[in-house]
Image (tube, rainbow, N blue to C red; front, side, top):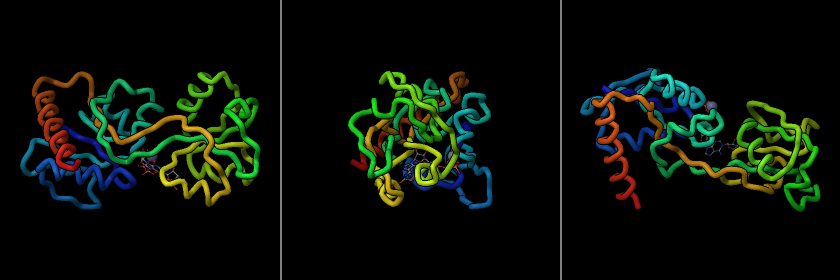
Length: 210
Ligand code: PRT
Ligand code: ZN
């Protein structure tokens, strides 16, 4: 039996469950349950907050997980990634108030930037030779400039409508992300075999979708 952790409720949940179903794996789903067992594959599914998934896989509480690459890299656990899954595509971007002049990332030198991704943003800015004050906030990052909390923000963007609605303009892409399959690095041989079977099926699903 192998344990796979997926997001309980959020942007990754539905596509993660669809992928498992399209792999021909059946299970009873209940919105109240925290775990469920597949009916025709030795798989147990755990439903967790996305932020908890990399750590649980690292510690072996779960063997496998599906999580946004943004969360994985921010947690410093990139080494757990086994493959990209092609859904939940988004980008981590820097944005400034629409009326502000902006020419290049050097304009952010010495500025206050609000983000939920201090590691990803910090290493991006360091690579650009820019020093800024990062303010880590866990939600509603987009309102930070309008309430005087920051000069710029760095947050996840997909359609761009949230930025637009908050009077912000996307100026730099810091990181491109999609959902990824992750695995504990010390899987027992039987579990490694099950992982390979799952990967084989996931790859077939992706080929069929194209
Ligand atoms: O409750 P839990 O902690 O499990 O969930 P969460 O609220 O932390 O995460 P959730 O469900 O919002 O996102 C899960 C993952 O989906 C993220 O880690 C990303 O990998 C991916 N993803 C894809 C997104 C988006 N698209 C997205 N648009 N995550 C967040 N957003 C948010 C963004 O933060 C911003 O507020 O949507 C807004 C922007 O969207 P647009 O379309 O207006 O640009
Ligand atoms: Zn989360």
